[in-house]
Length: 417
Image (cartoon, rainbow, N blue to C red; front, side, top):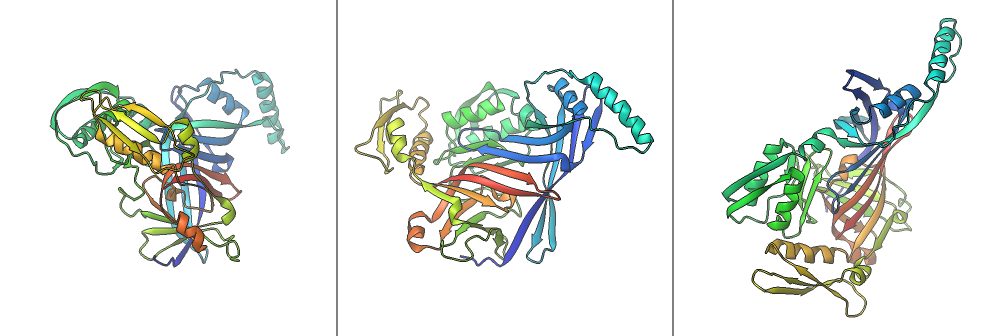
């Protein structure tokens, strides 16, 4: 294993937050310090979009203007990270993201106190001209759930055609280009079959991606299809890094020291000299190992009988997942004759055997992404023998919290082996 030699610390700042009202051509630029926090939840197995929650303090007038225009208001949010070395020297300043978002909200409460607000504003104006301290006219901490505007619109584009003598990769390239997606990070498909004819049904891009993955199959391990902030991910559910951007580090190693080690409470990140691997310290109290196999067997079964109705053949497999007693089974119908789905089902069941949940502090926001190779290294040899190795990121919740002059990032993550 490469020895980490360079220590780095991360701080974040909301460089700008604009609230835009397209209907009247007005936008408000807010001080980034009014942002209380930012939370981004991702579930790569069950969802296709991140849940982004912005907590921000707004004055009363702007608060109600957002409510009044809740179906058209837009948010331009720019978050940057500052990277420092062990000497507190700034080594890098970089955009984490700088995008336009839309929100969904059900609140239609009118501005019931507008007359009182306007009167207070008049008094403030008069007092300010006489050098007096203005009275407070109110502030509200609001939570907005944001979605990238471009992804939301383009993922709903209807695409319909017939493609002949092509691979699934050819079809994906066509439908992504038709929808206007030019930021896609994709693992090369395991399915390299050439099909005489493939119908692209009149579905949205989102629906067509799901359709082709279920009917034809992408990968033996199953697929992650996720419209994330930096790009659209189409990835194999592999524990290896199978696709990456230029200059991006591809490996993340979590170091868990022995509970008797005096440095067990040290957080932060370290890098190898080549810059391809980052090492993150994890406190022993911030990690938990469990298995979902036993309860999964009671609910859904670890044993599968998969029947192909077109030819009458069946596949019977029993995974080596942990279970209590003889276990139960589930009968499934392979209506699309998709062999990739069978392997993916088996891989998914077996991945429930070993799960790690971890809390992280003082991290690089970009270290938590589905295309990385994650490994755990335990200082305790007996634990390392059982739980070391590569894992796949399944869920993450990243918190960027306002700490006055800057923001710090924390995360709760779930991994499967």
